[in-house]
Length: 316
Image (cartoon, rainbow, N blue to C red; front, top):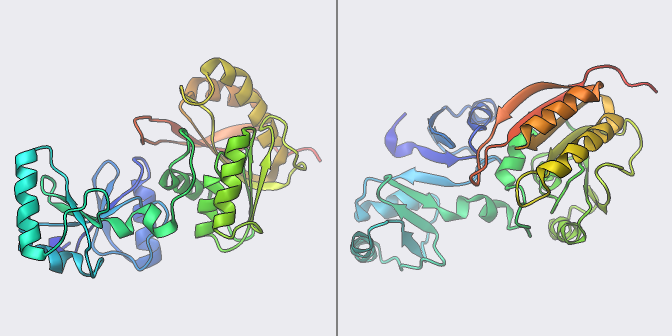
């Protein structure tokens, strides 16, 4: 893979193989994993999927080479920044880059981020939020690239219905709607602030007809039996949301509802760091079983994504 043509793509740690598979299957782009959460691709695909968080290109450290490296992605650079722990080296590089390129150092409004220590240039306009728009969020909101990986594990097909019973700001159904041209999603949450933000996020993307935002209880869903093809959910865990003691009660209740609303061939992908309580709850559920597990890392947490299916046919 020629070094000067590489693209450095980041995703949540644990989803690298899914990203690489999509690059090859959809665009015949070869890639390799560089490090946890980083994939080096032989070229940028014509469309960057929602698992990709940031994009960078290799740089040899020579300021004179920056315009030719960056111009295919950012034809006109109005601002750059230098990422360096050494203030003196940073200031020296800023001056060199400005003299060689005519670019302006704007740390708060940059289009390219120069990282000389790692030999790369991050392309701001190709970051997730720049491609798909920033969303209103709460402190424990699932990062969109993480939601994208969970959705990839769910294996949604055209026309399927999707539910996030702890929907927060509707990240999961919104990311699904970006990737999937049809289907319907529900985002349900008990927190009025989350529901308000979710409704705003959906409306700002003209997805009102495709995503139903409701206030409701994940342990007592106002949905018919056998009505949902896929459930994808970042369950409450950790200090920011709920507590281990609360999850002892909450997880079994949510799983009962998941079992009730899932179609006979349904599939759920449930993310949590309260792994012991979740696994115990599934064991007691009888009608559900874990068919796959995947550890994910982001924002200093390492939860597990559990893929859950029915262990028996539902009674009608």
